[in-house]
Picture 1 (cartoon, rainbow, N blue to C red):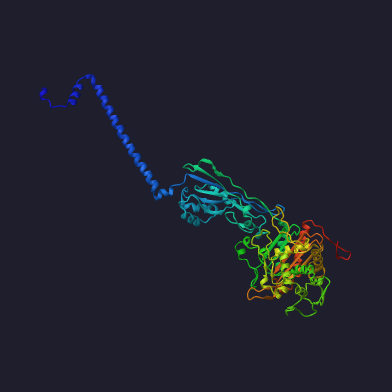
Picture 2: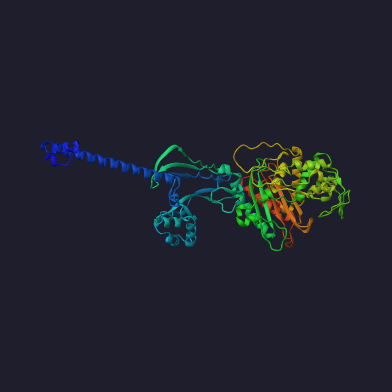
Length: 606
């Protein structure tokens, strides 16, 4: 039978023979199961390895060349939050707030979180009144952004409504808000900040490095829900608040000066006006005002287009715009000529009796009134152009130019107000005999009101110029510029007091204080064609008080008063304004009066 079986291999035959043995069946099953498990394990490992290779390849592909959709969704796992340093306060000399910062809120939208972008604009409009169309337009331009600002600073009621509504994807961002408690008082001096809280004009701009704080930041690792997970110590930078700055300005005086100047400009229908109050001893600027009025049909009047954009952005004409001082410049030339011995105070000069004086070059010099021969002292009291011209021709041109420089004209004061100019002075190469006489009368020279009060302060001091300053803190810079000797300064002060009692300042006397001052009425230069207007003027007046220990020097410049109203001379238009400013300032500062009334109601010096 064996011969009839098919031919088998030895290995198959062995298996067959073993299977015929009952005790070996269990071993065969176990062996088969083991082989099966091993086969499945190998297959699983191979499949897993293949899957990992595919995933790794895909990751590499996405890293190297991600799709547009993925690129838009990819984000840095780190977030940065910033904190803004609070901007420093501006305060006046007594701590009154001129500018301060508070916290406000502006609205933003995260398009990825909003449930329905088509209706979110309408929802916000119904809540707080923002334009739905404008909101939709902003969102459509930045749909892939996570932060889309849609408002300026919100009002309190708008903040309350947004918080109550709890709109998904709508949030509020903290922003600094600059507040000016004094409203329009000293507006152009203080200036303004932009939306990012950076100074754009005035002291806000010039003091940016002191007022502007330093922003802080923290960078942290976040989870998928943008929650902070980890912050490294070197990733935290605290913010630094800006420093407060105290000014020399006194808001009580400032408000009065602005009010009085506005009244004067309005009453004489002038193109504008400027006024400054300084403490001649310390050089501190106590008040500074500037007004421009628009008048139709008046060519050549003051202009400042930036004021139309924002009143706080306009230039400060007290430091930027030169003007011809006219007769208010005569005390400077008078003092230098007298100190140089070119004329004695009681020397009688051949001033004309009824016709204009002619200089050596034949130029005609007119006076408002002709008094005949007058002493050099009375030339200043009566403000005679002819007498100034006579002595000016005795002066070397170098001495006249030196006079201009010694009193600080043609130089910036460095007081810290942005936009300050140096004025206009004829250079030596262009100086002529015409210049020599013109400058002696306050023409052919352009001075700023700031320069004028600094120069005049020499008569209120010991002949030296103060270092004008707008900051009431820090060390006072030493006075280095001497204009005249102390005895000359006191002598000129005495004559300027006589101007108030027997000269062009008679209408501007104070009932309480002994003023020393000088008026000026200069013809207005033509904007086109050169020369001067015959019936348009710049009227000014400058004075100091009290006489023995001056504590204020005040200047008022009225631009182009309306002559048809009957008053245009500096002593009539600007003089009373200066007197009122002096009276208010000294009474406010607690300075006792140095004038008394006699039994006949006349005033006399103490």
